[in-house]
Amino acid sequence: MIPLIEEEVVNRKQWVSKDEMLDLIAIAQSCPGVFAINIATFIGYKLKKRRGAIATTIGTALPSFLIILLIAIFFHQFEDNRIVAAIFKGIRPAVVALIAVPTFNMAKRAQLNKWTIWIPIISALLIWLLGVSPIWVIIAAVIGGYIWGTMRGES
Amino acid sequence: MIFLYLFLTFFEIGLFGFGGGYGMLSLIQNESVEHWHWLSSSEFTDIVAISQMTPGPIGINSATYCGYTAVKNAGFSMPMAVLGSATATFALVLPSLILMILISKMFMKYMHTRTVTSVFTALRPAVVGLLAAATLLLCTQENFSTPKEDLWQFCISCILFAASFYGVKIMKINPIHMILLSAVAGLILFYE
Image (cartoon, rainbow over all chains, first blue to last red; front, side, top):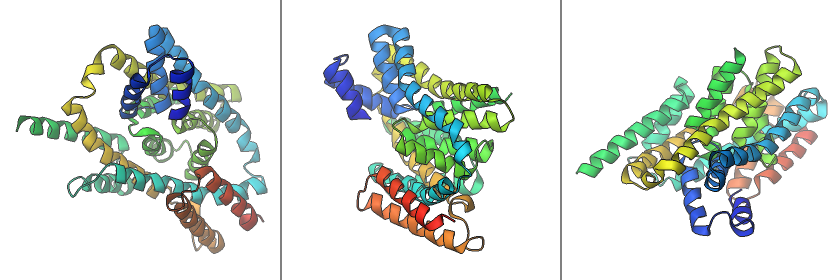
């Protein structure tokens, strides 16, 4: 999605410069929420303050919303169709694999060392086996990272 | 009441959904499947499949689908269900909107400080854990069947899982092509 946004916003409409765009991408990626929405809000706010932000946010969310709404309305009617059922039985294991792949890719990008390797393992086990909410894991990671950051800053 | 729960849940997901679409996935799964039972684990997997094939972000797609299905399953009419999907989608987007405006307004200068960097040093590995948990939680009977229930489906499912993993991770096949291939395999092998 990034190249698409860049082409439209930097090259064609020239709403932000290329350097600004790099900054925006970095911030939007590190903030919570849907990445495309974050970027859209930033650009909208930059151009026309609050009203611009609301406009770009709605604009980004609306196409997906409408497509999925249509699918949600009609999918239930086809669910019991034998052909659709067979197709989805084949798709489901593949989708689980599609989620497994980025797990490994992100692990590589997070540059885990002998100290940080325990964070994903313990987080996964807490959520998977003990049913802990991922939200608590995120809160714990934020607090832990903050404490570690302050301690490192002082020494 | 269900509208209020939908709003609060997806607001929470929007607020804590770090690490992009995949990071958000485990939050959505935990809330909508494990906690509220708005979706079955196979319905959730179907949404992920649909999200891979449609251009939109997975977060928006799940919120829209979940809002519709949850209200529909609670026994309301279709217009109410549409309102439910709008509620969930709006709630998911709202924290981004507020947060991004705040950052644009005043926190831009804090984004590159040492403290923020350290927070992300801990957050990134945690998101890896979230994603691993999502994968493990999706290895269910509904998605794979069991040797006892249907040995044929179980074996084929495992093969499809392994083939898709190998295809996307090692051979770098486009995920959408992989989904289409497994759809064809499903049609040939599971049609009865």
